[in-house]
Image 1 (cartoon, rainbow, N blue to C red):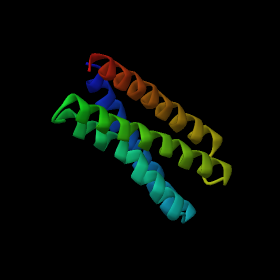
Image 2: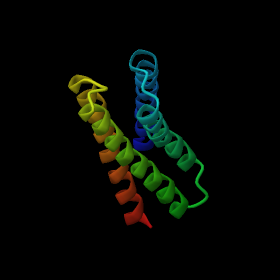
Image 3: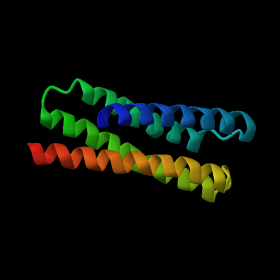
Image 4: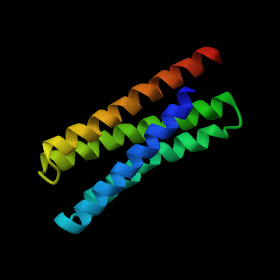
Length: 117
């Protein structure tokens, strides 16, 4: 059940990232930082999806670990966009909180799987 919730939350988060990218590209004419955010922010869910069909527990942990790394990178790009005034503090806090929730869930999932292995 945890992975299902994680899957849904990561998908919704990716949609939020896509919307932010579209806004940054059209309104702010910012393409470099926002493209990096788009790649890492949507990669979280993609790696979680890949983990669903992992060939082993080790493969599952590996895919989830990649998703965790992407979430950490996403946190970095969100901070850069906030500190360079491309996004508001409110947008930053909303997305950062969602991303931190994903990070906590990924860490918990990885720890649980490592304990089972």
